[in-house]
Length: 550
Image 1 (cartoon, rainbow, N blue to C red):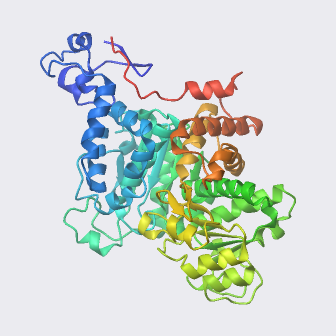
Image 2: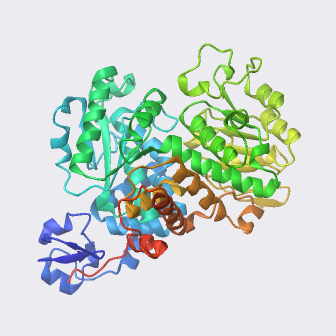
Image 3: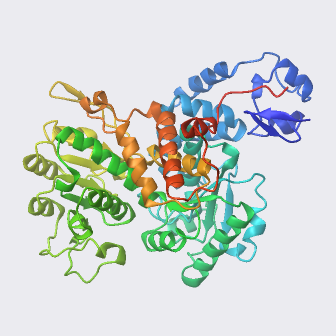
């Protein structure tokens, strides 16, 4: 029997318990009397038919009785495993409340405890022992993947090497692709490349789910990644592959190796860059100054810092600076101090931001010496933006730009309250983890997350709609400008540098349209261009409401 699943034809529908056990098709007590008769469900469900709206209320009532965030995560994960449409309805309609549970900051704790709260596998675990048969493993996935989010678990958020426990990150990211941009859930494939872990605590944990060995490196690692990339493109032609939470020593080189071969990006490098640049654009609307007049000092010198600096450099060049001049306005501070040309200990990705300057040992001195107009924290060092650092920024600038982007919350360089109180309410603040509104000197500020979920879902949507063959820096620049333009004057007045999160599907549709437009303009699109691109983008977005199967 054929039926429709959210508007698309599904082949042979399962019946009876098999249907109730299929999370993509299950509606639970919302199956109508006609559906119960058609699909042999009579007697397998209690008599009353609940609407999806009623089911949403029940989920929220139960969830809000739970005080522990990890237990809420487990409850939402269980819902995801039994009824995906209801899960995405709850997530999408209550994104402000639910995103911190399914992604940062709670997902960090969930990854740390992954084996202890494990209920049901989701996605594919491809291990170092699968070399030579990766294509066979990928063929075990029952759907045609459109987007893969893949990690090797070596640098999960600011928490380090969590091995196979890092699978929580691709699962969470892909949930946001669906909730924020309407990417159909059956197109989303989370992948863990389990190459071992060097985390001794996990290796000794009886509940650890991954390979009990130290990480493979060198040629063996590269061969597994290459086999995975090749097989994924063969099994799922045209699939988008997003690299997620790889350590610095692999992230940069893998992006460089594959970005011109396949349709891929690294969200930690490029997505973070776009959302940060959008926040800077918003802040400059308040200060009334130009991007090319800023001096930006980064605390941290890894993927996020250099990714942001690269995109800022490109934006400054678009405003008239040459590359050397633009790079000179971006400075990195790592664990050994200011990144300067005379240092001999610099990794390759830091060298392009190693300028001629006397050594400086600490962050605050670097701020004072360089007369920073903006500081961006991507260090995963909690509390690094101390009171003296923030007071220095307020002394140097009428409206200091302060972005504490590390997550989860414990790794945030400062809290929203600290940023506002220690700058006399003058900070233009963005955060990597969610913070509540802050009242300072009688005025209430509403900080918003510089969360990559403003960027990557829309980018993925635009790439799918256009059939883009590659994902370019131009697309991320376009996404940053689009996001910044969606920030209203009312947002800025209350200190918000990003749109309200409940607008995220609108934001993603606009970014998807802009990215697809860029793909067509640059000759990268494989699909014919529709007459009304925005309408085409919106028509592709998954609707998390039940539809009749009969």
